[in-house]
Image 1 (cartoon, rainbow, N blue to C red):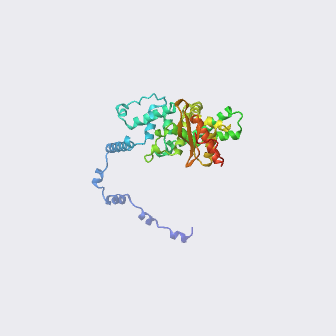
Image 2 (spheres, rainbow, N blue to C red; image 1 turned 90 degrees about the horizontal axis):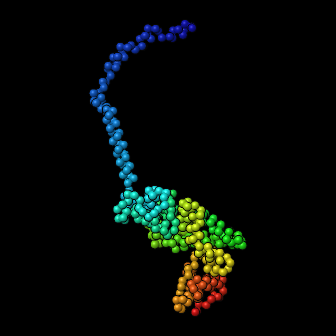
Image 3 (tube, rainbow, N blue to C red; image 1 turned 45 degrees about the vertical axis):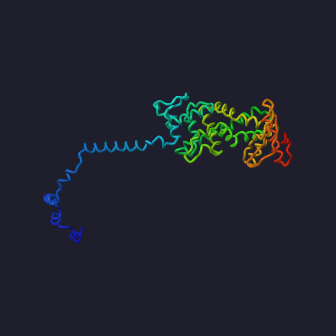
Length: 346
């Protein structure tokens, strides 16, 4: 190292002077501001902390319980139905109220009303659910559901497919001489929205729907009734399997099945008219008895067809069924600008 760099080094006595002695550190600590006596008193004892935590947890539980407790009269019918289904479990309903219902049910509580609605619906359907929660879901419109996943939309999707499959299977095995095009027309008429609506109305299923407060059970739209019918089919399929669904469908859709099959042979004018009006006007024909004559054992009927605001020439028949067929043929003729076949005079 050269002499010039040596001169730049700090002298040894200067380094010693820069080191802080132990006495200086002690003096500095003593000079600092002392700890306040009150600060020690403000420290919370450990047992006090545990006591406060337990109290806070208890308050939280109480608040949670209050949030979950909704007055029964303000709850949705569908929610009550699901609660009942959970209590009843996956057992066939025998008509008795769940345990602990007691006098509250007999006095007409909401739970009792909902249970009675489900039991009455089972009687109308002539099917007893092992899991009545499926029926509750099938009857729940989105307007009456707490959220869409508990409504009947998913069951409707399933039921539509089951209905179509069972009708196609029936037509394939029963109508061996029917071609694919004819079977397609038959199937379309049987599983149509109009047919599903008619079946629901005939069974008066609208009275069992769980609807929102703004909807009227007396004026349920046709689309909701059609959706409900498909939902019920889906619920029966999930509850009892394909054969249970088949038995229900063949029973409640029997009129449409027979009319459709006969209509393809050219003998059922009612079905031919229905297929035309559904395809062109998107409406169902309505048959009205205008007049009846003769003794009870030989009474004749005059029937007229209405399709929306359209009215067609009436026709007579030896019974209502024959008069409806005659009136339907008259309507078909008029729709093709041809003169009616059957006179309207007796």
